[in-house]
Length: 236
Image (cartoon, one colour):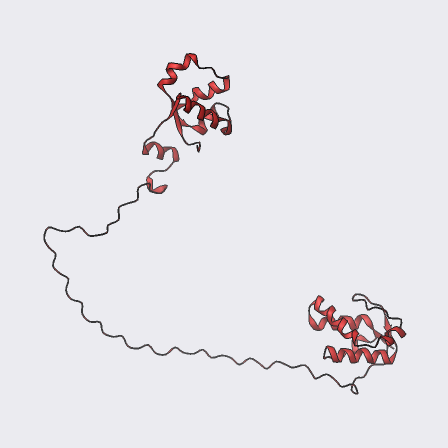
């Protein structure tokens, strides 16, 4: 049941009405079947929920006290608010003509088709001009060990870490590059400056040892293929 069904009381109900025993809400629902309203409307008027009305309606149908009331197409269209069948999708699709009806007199055969004149060949498509991309600037070759020079001032470790990270443009990959660089620095030089770990953010260490500064600059040059900028050094 969908709630759109329409039911009416039967002649069997009229014969058995005096002997039927029901509770008051059930009587209210049974007497509401008038052959005009849908099941959902009947349940609403009888103050019964649709879930409660379903099993009671089944019981009344089984007992033969109600039966479904067929309705005409016009009645259905009025209930759905549609002006015609096409507004809701035709229940009976329109006829499809598969063959033209035969006339009593045989139709004259159509005139023969004239041979088509071959069309002139199309010109070849123009190939778009592809602009030559400008040559990409290549980074300068890494400096050799003899060319690596450091400034006199202390080296700011936080500036070195930030510079290495900026070469990649991705924080996670930049951190990996930092680890790779400092793995190339001799550990004894780091321990001599009391550097046991490198903080990736806000490291306040200042490196004054010339040998450690050169080792870090050399590691950056070998791993990142870039020289350290002057900005990593603090004023002397």
